[in-house]
Each structure stands twice: as structure tokens, then as C-alpha cells.
Amino acid sequence: MQLFIDTAEIDEIKSLNITGLIDGVTTNPSLIAKSGKNIINTIEEICNEVSGPVSAEVTATDFDNMILEGKKLSSIAKNVAIKVPLTFDGLRACKVFSDDGIMVNVTLCFSAAQALLAAKAGATFISPFIGRLDDIGADGMNLISEITEIYDIHGYDTKVLAASIRSVQDIVDSAKLGADVATVPPKFLKSMYNHPLTDKGLSDFLSDWKKTGQSIL
Ligand code: E4P
Image 1 (tube, helix red, strand yellow):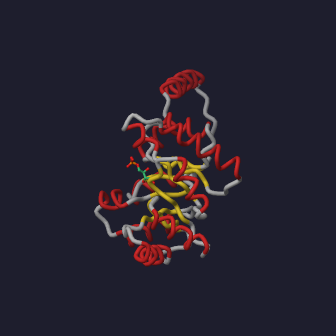
Image 2 (cartoon, rainbow, N blue to C red):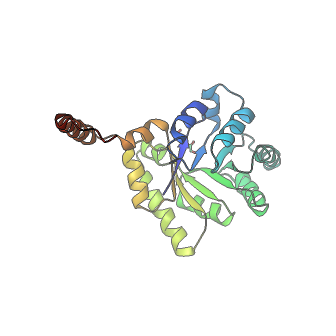
Image 3 (cartoon, helix red, strand yellow):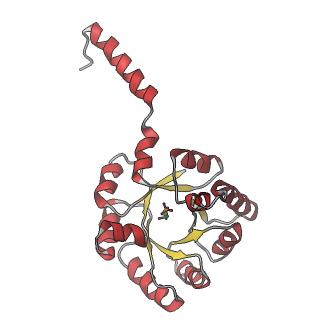
């Protein structure tokens, strides 16, 4: 399973990218706004840091302007994936970009029917928003399950990108259900490697080791 990082903060991206475990980055207009930085410069900086797909979202809602914005974002770097919303115009734009060989991430997916259309439109990634479904009392993980089942049965290449992650368990559950990618806020990525028993075990090992008076180097 690939792990993308869900942030527009370049410093956070750099600090996690040194692990070699980051396969890509997703941004959205809210994350760009939160960063307080210019979208073009930010996407350029991120693409210089990470070689995997970097999702940059259009903000136009009509087809013609989505195409113009998408082309501009795509010209920033080869690894930009144009993010379009799962609307009628977004799906039209997705088809045009994917026919042109440009990666597309279809975002704001909340139903299996929407995901089916995105696959037919040639999306590289479909982004089901787990957390936002859970927030309204629906079952976000069930959506991941439905989409992976449909894509497997019909052999669609579109990758399932679990988005709107709210916990480490969401990442684990998405992985078990066959999601290809999870896009993870930095704080959850850090929580993934932390475990109190790892800390305690290490502390015990080191205290026993100290008693030996040995040194490996
Ligand atoms: C995905 O690409 C989105 O940027 C993101 O996962 C949305 O998450 P949120 O619901 O926490 O805003």
C-alpha cells in the first residue's frame, strides 16, 4: 500500500520524506489556504521534494476553466496529478486529462456509484472521503470496501486512495480492504510508528546493555 501525505506544508513534507516512506502528496484548496502560500509556488516546491504523484486541485467548477486551471497546474511538473471534484464537469475534465496522459485524482467521492463513473472517466485515483462520511453517521470504510470490490470485479485500473483519514486504524482498515493508497495527515503518519511497548522494550534493552559495559563500535 502506498502512503501519501495530506498537507501543503513543505517543512512537514521534507521532515517526513527523509524516511523514504512517502510515495506522494495530496493538497486541496483548504490546505493551501491554511499554508498561507501561493498555490503555484507551493506545488512546485513539493514536486521538487517528492518524486511521486502530487495532487493539485482545480478551483473552477465549470469544465472550460477546469481545463485551463488543470493545464496550468500540470505544467508545473511531470508528477502533478490534477485533482478535480466528482461533479459532472469534473468527470468531463477527468476524461480529457486522462486521454491526454495526465494523472487525475477525482476527489470528494462519497458513493460507489460516483467511484464507478470516475473509473470510467479514466481517473488515476479515486478519493473516497472516509472521515467525512463517518462524521455524518455513515460508514466510510464500507465505501472503501464497495469500491475495491467493484474495481476488482470489473478490472478498473483506477487506484483507490483512502482520504479524509481520522485515525491510524483508518489506515490499517483501508489497507486490509485493499485500498491502493492512503493519504495521511502528518500527525497520523508519526503515530503509525509510535507504540508504548516499543519505547518500553527499547528502554529495557538499553538498560541491560549498559550493564555489560560493551560497545559495538
Ligand atoms: C484528500 O485528498 C483530502 O485532501 C483530505 O483527505 C480531506 O480530509 P479532511 O476531511 O480531513 O479535510
